[in-house]
Amino acid sequence: MALICPPALAEDGATAEVDLRATVVKPFCVVTLAACDVGPTEAILWGAVVAWPPPSHVDVSFGWDTTSHKDDPGGYPNWVPGDTLLLGLVFHTRVSGLTPGKTYYFRARAQADGYTGYGCELSFTTLSEFSVITLPAKEIESKKATLYGKTIGRSRSPKATVSFGWDTQPRADKKYKNWTSAQNVYVGDTFSARLTNLKPNTTYYFRARAVRGGVTYYGEELSFATPPQKSLWDWICGN
Image (cartoon, rainbow, N blue to C red; front, side, top):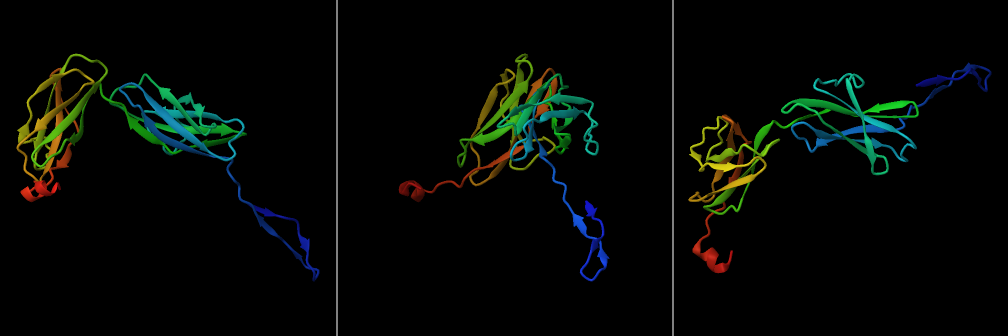
């Protein structure tokens, strides 16, 4: 912003205009933080006010919708107030009644002393009514490893039939050469399968699968690498 002052008298009698430039400083900035505890029908939204010292009083809220309002910060049809934490700098709220398996867009907002600040728009996707997650492999040896998975859903029953597909090549088409024996587990349970007779120093790819209510669900494909097999000298030396 440029401020032009009245003409000033110079030493030689001429007049001159002095151009004063001022920078408008925002009283605070707003940051939208990632949503957490996202379930099938609810999620917790987080935001922060960046200012020091903190404003004496600030009203915080979140706008959310199933449609993006990236270029229209105030255009969200749903606004919910936030609860402040940590000296009033961090705030959050829980939104519920959401639709499972749907993407939602949200943005943090703060208002104080006639100024309104917005954070960037972020998004999250609610969990489906039922899903299966592939967890990292553990207890990895040169010829053995244990695969882990977990089922997630709103209801513990009916049970799901779970297994793992595994191969030495990634299988985006889910057509693995090997499948572990099927198990029946309740929703929310963690399950595992022990692989044996693997090749040392080899990368393996695997994915959890669950069948429930006649529908097949797949987790994300992960991988692990078996270490080289120890030689007799390694065993003797304790390596």
